[in-house]
Amino acid sequence: MRLANLVAKRKIKGIIFDLDGTLTNTLEQHIDAFSIVFKNHGYNIPREKIQNQMGRRPTDITRTLIFKDKLDNELSQEEKATLQQIALEKETLFRSLIPVHPPMMPGLPDILIQAKELGLNLVVVSSTTLEGVSLILERLDLLKYFDALDG
Image (cartoon, rainbow, N blue to C red; front, top):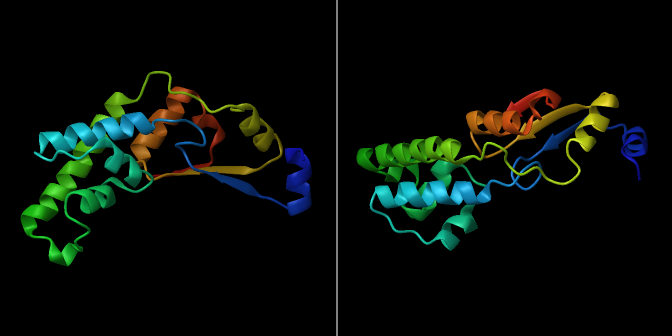
């Protein structure tokens, strides 16, 4: 079914997109960033374990892999600081690992052009930080199609 028919039939007003696996694929860069930062902090976490956590926010991944899912009130002040530091370092390193030309998923930007021509609002929601989302979309030359971003 063509997008125009689907929009008319379902009275669709907008589309919410995830970033990784939908618009691009930067999974390896996320895993690399976590792996490097964890090692820098003395934690040797296998790539497979990191990959199994993808799709979650850096603090949540770190909490699971390093602090065994302790709640905030169960973490010491030092652990809380380490948790935040690792998450921040991971995101900073991740942004530096994003290719100048990230891979674009098949069908883009054609689907985005069609959606905008139909008057749809387009939004990206991601566990990647807003800075990372913006950078990736800018490098893909797709930022101009989106009405809102959340990371």
